[in-house]
Image 1 (cartoon, rainbow, N blue to C red):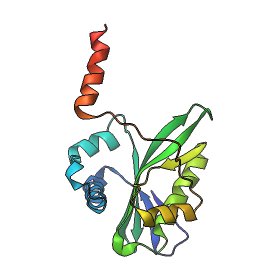
Image 2 (spheres, rainbow, N blue to C red):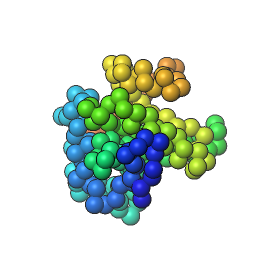
Image 3 (spheres, rainbow, N blue to C red):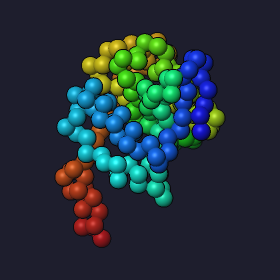
Length: 171
């Protein structure tokens, strides 16, 4: 499915199973930009299952300029108990460096905000690395507010295994 945008020659397309290698290439480009390439363990097989398998965990859209992929976004639904509504969470947004400053990122975010409203979401949110000043400045310019009173907590790897095993130990 292709969605027209306010920018001439820029279209948004929902990703399909056939786009898995493109999705992985964008993930690797994003990781390189964020200096986190060493953390990428995703494979095409994993993406096929988690994005297009029986129970998809997220959705992906690509931005195409003159039919060339220049941007992507990965997003999924979360839930706000306080609002009693779903939210849309943006996991990743990436515009190729040579294509920045043309408004593509803003169009991608605008599309996702529209999608959030269309789906009855009460929020649209994402994280940004604290050193990424250009992104923070851009997000502020579109009305995004930092949630300074919250800190991110994560359990992964061995800590996740240890915590999960405590459930089985008590049964």
